[in-house]
Image (cartoon, rainbow, N blue to C red; front, side):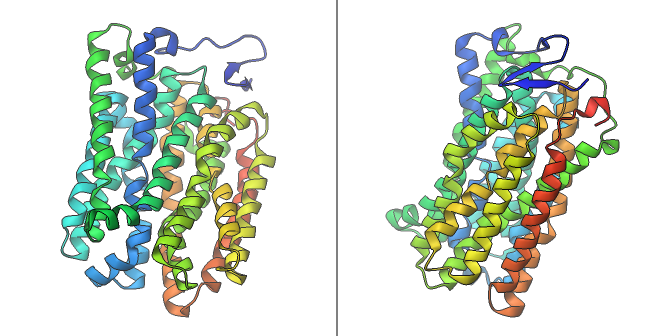
Length: 423
């Protein structure tokens, strides 16, 4: 029988499920706090390498002689890397343990972000970006796993916590990259390099978790043991496929926002600083909503109505950007920010649609790798449409259709099912 979720507590019709493996009660309060802080720091570093590039994309294109099509490829690169490297996450986690793999992921992000500004050609820029994106891909897949293993009775709360950290990193990089670049008196290279600093902090925090966990029996290091539960035939699950398609469609919207929204506003006559601020507003909506929506989603037996509201906000924003991009700039940014909060909702669904640690690990890897693979053409096609038509009407019409499709498949993904029961 499918699990029922009352708040953050997992229940079945006959009994309350006792969490297995590491839980918050198996850790000292200090270690639990350290893991929680580590979740926020790790999540903070999952988007600045992407959202910090948008406000400076025009300068990077000019310096490295990028065409709009190549720039579209650059905005599609995150999805490609997430699909390829994200699929490796379960195997790496089983071999080395989730905390150790997360340390490696954070290190790859930090190194890639630090090296990227040194690039003198488009090829080197793409390669160093790929290093950072590989680290993000592995870390993306581990976040739901770590939450389920360390805090299985607080899935909604802890998903909301790290989703808030992710939103802060996304919006902070979008809003602060240009002002910090100006304050430091540097160019686009300085603006991109500064985001290696929070990455170094995340590495230090998770190294501490690994070291202390090994020194304390029953502590977080025990999470490196194999996940509980038998493997699931994930590709036969309709829920897994619905979640993957939903994830891919919402990811397309998110990466188009991060990669192209600033350019839409700049083409409408707004300054680079204002465009970056508007992107930050859109991304910043995730700060309060990313904490509230996962807990709200966990309380519903069917998340379809919530998903519908978020999708329709995206439709309204795209139509507004087509008709009055400058006049209604702030309203469209707010609506698009609400729409992009489908991301913390789908992360919550990954935790809710599997009962065991093994199931969550498999579902997280499948949904994210498949979803990111599906979203690869979106940002690239937006760049091609923009370059071929010289305007934003066709790209935004395309995004409107995708938003409506996202609502349809999200309703299926929101059904009360678990993959272990064949759902």
